[in-house]
Length: 237
Image 1: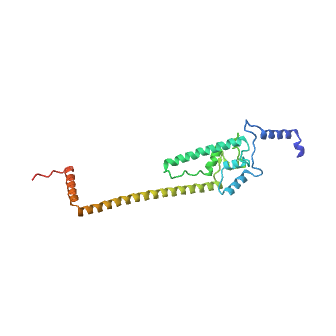
Image 2 (image 1 turned 120 degrees about the vertical axis):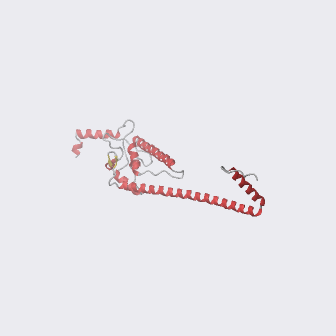
């Protein structure tokens, strides 16, 4: 093996690889990451265990391309991460706008699924000549035609659970909204009944205590009958 690396062919190949690693790449800087000896699959699993939920490719990318001090490992990684964050914010704003149109102000926009976050990352990152997304490492095996594989994907099952939870949350919100509306209607109906009962009591009191009130009622009733269409005026005696 040592003899091989001393050959001219091996040295040229080594120099080529070295040049690629440290090349400026049109101002984007050399390509590095912080995955260490772990594969991207292992890092994704570690993140899922740490967070207790499925994680997107974007989260794995940020984990593997961020230094301990929070800075990105190179300009390219930073550019992709910024594009990813921008696209996420645009999607969240879109969901919020949709929610405000179809529901009352008390409803919250639905939460995005892991697959939606992954789809946004795949739109945000760069691809090589073969269409392989940049920055996904061994996780490229989980993709089919540049999209996340669905059949048999455990994270898709988790995503389905998240969607079911979101649907349940919306059902509960709608039920609470309907309950509030029903309570408001009941209060309004009770208020109307109280007013009617009060007016009935006042009328009863006036009928029993005030003769002028009886004369007033009789006069108003006669005037209303005379003004009604098709009513003949009383004949002169």
